Amino acid sequence: MSVTASSYRTGQSVSFFEGNERLQPWASPRRRGERATLGPEHVLGSMAIPFMYPPERIGDDHFGDGAIQQLSPISPAIHLGAEKVLVIGVGRCSSAGAILDTRAAYPSIGEISGHLFDSIFADTLESDLERIRLVNEMLALIPHKVRERAGLQQREVETWVVNPRQSLEELAAIRVHRLPPALRLLLSAVGAMRDGRANVLSYVLTEEWYCKSLIRRGFRDAMAQRADIADFLEIPLNPLRTAVRQRAVISKSNEAVKLPVPAMAVAATGASYAALPLQA
Image (tube, rainbow, N blue to C red; front, side, top):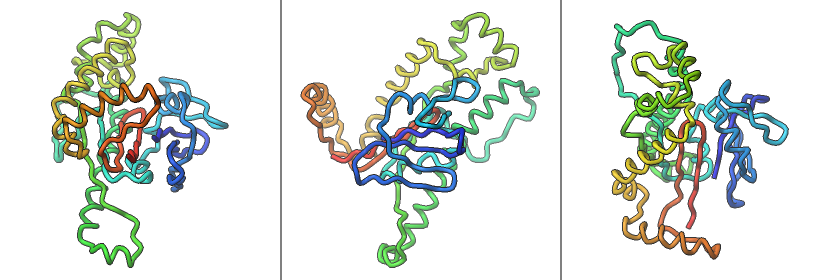
């Protein structure tokens, strides 16, 4: 498992990972992988959006949101040996050649902030997915024997992206009236709720009703695509249900459940990132 946070001291994107001895640390100019015993501090640091939540101290350094300086969000999963990457997104990937509405009103501070959040949390992911696609196409043109002679370490990585069927911005706007009056007044003053828009709110809202709504809708979205997801993970649906039921029983005796899955990763975009190389 890997959780990424941004160091305020060095400016690096640090992926703290925990796993077996075969997993080795790595280093690049702007990012590195560091072995650690993961705890709440790593998750809190990974989710500490600047100016919204305080930095989290880990060791001798302070860390903020993992999306900052994370130019290649899927890179940690690949370093940890993933052959398949299931990406759970927080929004819809933008369509190519989309035309902006030039008649829109002058953007408010809230709308500009929402645009910046989208740039941090979503744009780098789309760029990384495009880069993986291009590398896969390039590797497909090179015979395996040629790769071995040249010492190429790159490998094909299969990806699957799951995004919410309903915009999180729309979901946040539906129940915005549940917020305290003072907070609604502040958001209105900066234009964060103009014309029913709540982009900023969808990133920073932590109210119980909103979180429960995300869980329910996420579960329904996953169930609606369960056949495709199971096919991508190469897990038959019926054995998967059996294994999940067994896990609840066997976990009481601290025994491991072996699922028929290849080395893979699950990437959660947004505030935190998780890479799970599953080795049965």
